[in-house]
Image (tube, helix red, strand yellow):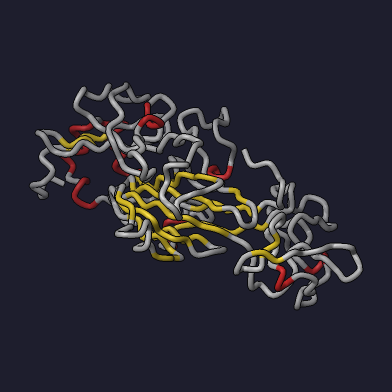
Length: 353
């Protein structure tokens, strides 16, 4: 990027997972977009009083595995640490049951290979910085399918954070989306619209808290931007009983509130006892995905051929969350991969860590 006067100098270091640090000298903003087990990224979030919104803030200095130490003036962007469990100070509309981080970034592996094999100066002299072209895309420092592995797995020692959101029907999920790279990423969340309640650390409010919020089906994540959004899935309006209840089975649904949801299961009572409106194919005529439980009903399993399924032990509903720039759901042109994960709607009372 020599031709860009805003960047006086850019240094790229390579860590174990080839994470990126972009360090801009001479008083410019210094952005460290590393998600690394040896970096204090988890301290990069300071919750503003009362608002509880996401902002990219300094997190100190520390040596990054595989690269030189940061200088004292380096600041970093990274995942928010968990805010206090007490949400009594949160404005109306920002309460939630689950919270998940989606730190979005990308990597140009050719540029990183030059730095790794020849050093920073060689990359600078090559002019390669002028046509930065990513071919790997990350959520929380991981590519799919590793985004769906457990947090802290030993095989990913420098990528400790996963990105597998889970919720129950009727619960509210706080999505903290951080643009940690150079590019914009259209982060598309299947299953339900999300209501954006804050951008860049500022609540979308005026005289009434969050009355400037708005619903989206894709969060247009910009470089350096943070977005807080609330997603709530109920299954209302699907047109069938999501639990597979049948007349005479003794099940009951007691409608409460304007949505007519059962207070315990959050089932839509408008759809209670409604049968599935389609005839399912025979089991041997299907190719089952790893998240299929063998049943179209929440919390129920069905018979499947040996080796099918297995990634959905509680028989939840799963929805893909991914970049809507299709090349970004590949790993160096290999699909599936990249900036992709799943949302799992777990049955009521299923523990969610």
